[in-house]
Length: 428
Image (cartoon, rainbow, N blue to C red):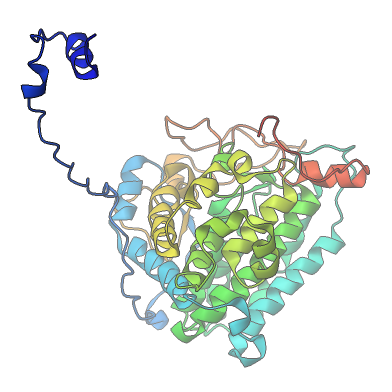
């Protein structure tokens, strides 16, 4: 009967004489060399040095307008001083939050400017009570009362900015434009990362006017920004703001980005919380009030009608497999540069003025279409055709497809008494 070795040789097609199989030498086994980890093709964005505030006595304010009207304009912006200014400001705030809890910053110990900013956001929140939502018969689309809220907000811009004690009141119209566009689109009743970026640019303008100093950056990231996020959540729940884009479910969040960047910086060297902790409800409950990243994930689990990040936000689920928060924070930097500042559907709505200037080569909005960046609603509150372009790989989702509010489903279920908690996907 053939031996096992002979059987192997027969099956491999070799003819071996009986009794000679033992004389064959097997090839030596050489261990494979470990393969190097694949390098990220995107370079890690560094934090440029933040320029000193300009001498505003030599400058004149202008009404901010859109200047990124094509891919060529976007490329010019990415190579401009304003791009470095924006990344320097955002990344400097993020670095100032490194390894700090939210409670490490006390409002009572901050400079008056921080308390003034919180007071303004509190006043904006009061406008929600003055403009209650309309009855929409359980509709999950944006509530038209949001337009009344924006009108009330716009009318109070001079009042709010008077509290900031500008060096010269002539700067109020330019700076106020960014705050006015920080709470969503009046015609479309939606909100997205572009509006969040406008709020950050409002703070950058205050920095350019020497009102917010680098020493205020920790309080800006750990006090002002969480207050802004809480305000936006109330707006989303009240007016069912639609996500500004139909693919938010596949991203980090349907509305926000910067809290993930600042929150990852907070957790950089945390002794026991790891990226996988986003799947632990106990960690989210106990630590969510201190860390923005965990708070954003906690809010997601509370407002979604399906249980499980891999179903609601697959990217967050993928990121949770990172070895440490350093990798997560580096990824957030890359994502901010590529997916926010580097995306034409977002940046074509970006506003440039004197404090955040465009380059001379960039297009002039009124030369191209002669109308504002926000399409004016007609008598029925419906926007006119949009006056900008979309990338080929999008669905026109910055304004073309109405997407129901993500939080509206759970809120309507609560109102009707049919909420049963989070549902699991079958076979999960």
